[in-house]
Image (cartoon, rainbow, N blue to C red; front, side, top):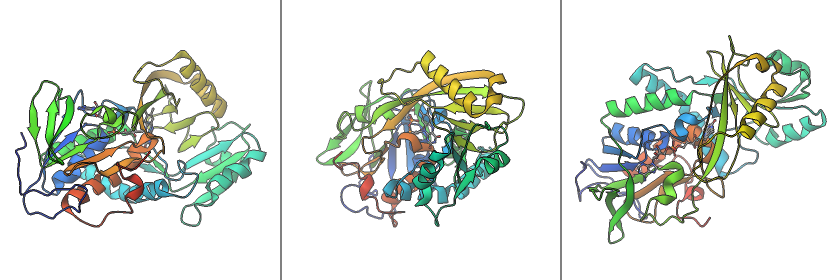
Length: 387
Ligand SMILES: Cc1cc2nc3c(=O)[nH]c(=O)nc-3n(C[C@H](O)[C@H](O)[C@H](O)COP(=O)(O)OP(=O)(O)OC[C@H]3O[C@@H](n4cnc5c(N)ncnc54)[C@H](O)[C@@H]3O)c2cc1C
């Protein structure tokens, strides 16, 4: 159990102090956010324990589709785009290190994403949505012929679209497994069945957490990375609706070989290919609290939209369906940085882009604990900002 150390680094509202002592860090939540933060901290020498109420990685972080869509997800310049780009820059070396540490191929595949439309008149609008990203980002307007050259399985009824070549895809369950194994090998302790009820304080300082069974665990730093449940953790002064669950349903199909080579986003669904012939169809966006069910309407709509985009998917086998919760914030910006207390850090609210944003978030949290220039201006992501 992490012990109290008054000599540790102490991130809070004031600047993080550098310290030679080994900080003891408690991370609340064992999803990709908590686990990648834990890994980054342990690699720098922190003693880290991840507290997970159920099974590490079993929520949004394994349910995610795996689009690394810095370009696709951002239709206007701003802090989210800057953060996404910063994370995309970290991705190749992050994944390389994970594979070296664990031997796991996490399915990281550059190659871009494509936004496609059926209506010719809509191509200009689609192109305009992304054109501002050039010349920094690669944005290519494509007509029907080029579209079908790039992805022959797409419907000939499509008029064209936009190729966003800097985007990529990944396989989230493999990414999570590799991150978890790498973290454990770096010395991170995972405690499962550890439901954190609240962060407890001494004056204005976070001193540790209280578990549901009354156990108190002390630490120098508490990182709350509880995904869609973040607002339910008591004592961190986030309003109850600061982070809320936004359910997404996914349908998984299987074909003898991959039908696409890159992510395709149509008007009513997106398709993510896996190398083994699976295709994921995503996703619904529903505010239904923590109801985890998959609905008939959701499956019907996703299947219909997918077959409209790729007619051959009508003959694919249905492999499975699932749903999970994106940690949604009203301004669509994550909460990354110092919380309302000394010694409290938040890494949450990544909504649709938590897989994409994991490396940048982990690096940011590690720099806040150990010192170092931030990757970018963190003010827009300040967890204490007014919603
Ligand atoms: C259908 C769907 C598709 C998605 N597709 C993509 C995509 O293509 N690309 C992308 O970048 N992102 C995608 N996302 C978003 C991404 O999955 C999330 O942003 C990301 O996984 C959030 O990670 P997290 O660790 O914050 O949350 P989670 O993975 O939900 O982990 C939070 C963890 O905290 C634990 N926890 C909560 N409260 C407590 C507590 N009090 N005590 C102890 N433990 C606690 C939970 O049990 C859970 O394990 C998708 C999400 C969904 C649902």
